Picture 1 (tube, rainbow over the protein chains, first blue to last red):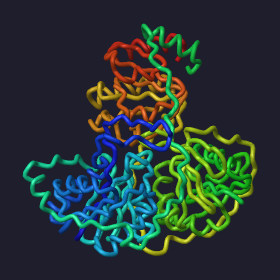
Picture 2 (cartoon, rainbow over the protein chains, first blue to last red; picture 1 turned 180 degrees about the vertical axis):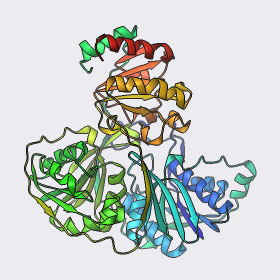
Picture 3 (tube, chains in turn cyan, yellow; picture 1 turned 60 degrees about the horizontal axis):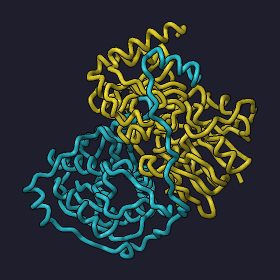
Picture 4 (cartoon, chains in turn yellow, green; picture 1 turned 120 degrees about the vertical axis):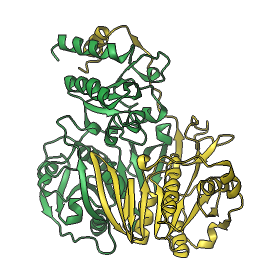
Length: 249
Length: 313
């Protein structure tokens, strides 16, 4: 079974995000960029499926600028077999991304598309669900466990209040939550090997898909600052202030 | 035109996230219908929300398990009468709303925290470290609402209840196997007035139970945890407060032994009052806490319990 893993290049999760003074977006100049952490988890899961003999080939795909090749190389170093970059400098909305992925699915015919549940930049949490809709495939989001047997995936999902287990006939779309696995660090030999793995670069136009935005971003602003920093001396002082000053107990 | 709110419910009543989403819907249009899917018994509570025009109910096996494929099929069936379809950004809402938007080929606005006008909304990006104002174009759209950012629409309505036919999703759909829902007498984390959360400093699941839960029970609070505590296995995953867990905004948030990683702050910084108890005076949590107590929780929490006892808690 072929597994398709979409990965996104985003601002590194340890970097403090700064809004541009003209409020047109977030400052990405000279900022460390990395693979979206949830996509590292989905890549890791695909590699484990291959190690178990369930997956036969892992194709990673990124839609983004030329530098997204670095993100693909990271996934290749983790164990993916080949990469596809649909190159664009445009910041595409989830629906446009899902439409491009649908076109890639038509070419690649994977048995499973494994995505991160959300990208930590736009925080939309939408592409997997949208892709499943466009393909009319079953979906399981927020996966914390995936078991594949024959042409059925049994997926445990993290939901409000607990866990839900779903059964999906393949092909299907699954999105990874935090606790699905702990991604490996690529070893140096694997990083070297990844440099030789193929990456196919294509323009968005090749896919004949409508990627026009549906939303207009009017501005991006800093959230209001919270005034904190006050200290109390003791538990007695704390209870007194909560009762008399804040009135919350 | 009208707005459809797809309710968040527990099968018996709608949760207050639904009334909060109605608040957003009423800011978009004056005609607001609420759909209670797979839990018709909850329709009566939805009908009491002020400003609701009518309540729709639908039943099917898939709807009963909140499956995305079934909710999407029903949403598609009803979409014709509405300019917007809203649902709270719960694990159910986040699961089906993007699927519905893609099926309808319309815009999706995730996690609305403010309504500017009927077409313009504010939503957090980068874990709430930036706020994006977006405008949807002409025509229908689908949105999820971060309920903690809004006040609930008041009670006092008496909307009519109408059943609509629903068939299980045609085409390929996931099927339900089982679920494990944690039963608790404590308030639900997402809607609680007080939340007591524990972090990595607790050191073990036993210590988490021994320290955090009695304090929460004394305050009538829900229990939360930092990602570090959940990853270490001290608390179950649905306790996690943060960017990748639940977003809460209670009147009082008590963080015990939590350092305050950015990803945790993203999930609780909109709380009205934040209390931090941590022995490290330099922990980032103190920068946003209204009341910081620099102390070892092993001493501070028993002291706090005793002081609460004194005021009759």
